[in-house]
Length: 112
Length: 116
Image (cartoon, rainbow over all chains, first blue to last red; front, top):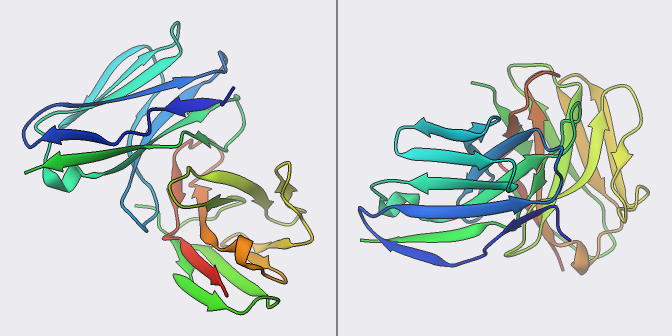
């Protein structure tokens, strides 16, 4: 079983809609969770980090974490064409370790 | 904000040659840097952890004699792909945490390697 799993998509939403991206992880002792955005041919850039159960909002982005269900999601409100990218879920599996394990990413397309 | 600089952005080389990729932390010292590889439409896969002043730690299945890592200073780590072959063609990305307590990684811009 993969440590971090995402639906590869592609996910298409109309401009202005809410995009919902989901991620599950296998290691119950995972400490930290991140969402990265990656444009084609570019390196990932951090969008959100979340460490506690519940919701965390930052502008149009909301990260949701449910440790009991081993599930983390990213909501993008008022989606814009510039949000079209691949979104990578990353999990830090062990306390004290710096490396992250990445999901395969979900390709999002926002249709004007 | 923290910046990680990676060079070159892309390189084309002949099979059998070696390629060196540099990763620099520009405004912070990085005792640890991570090297990832990403094949098309796949996720980032950790190859190795570069540690300043000591040997790198390689992930299972990654040949340490083929992917040489040197972390000679607190701001520079290099990855050398030795005797490159077409199957080594990939997107290589380095990253570094700003400090040992900061869990957020800053990524270099990546290097697209094409081996002919």
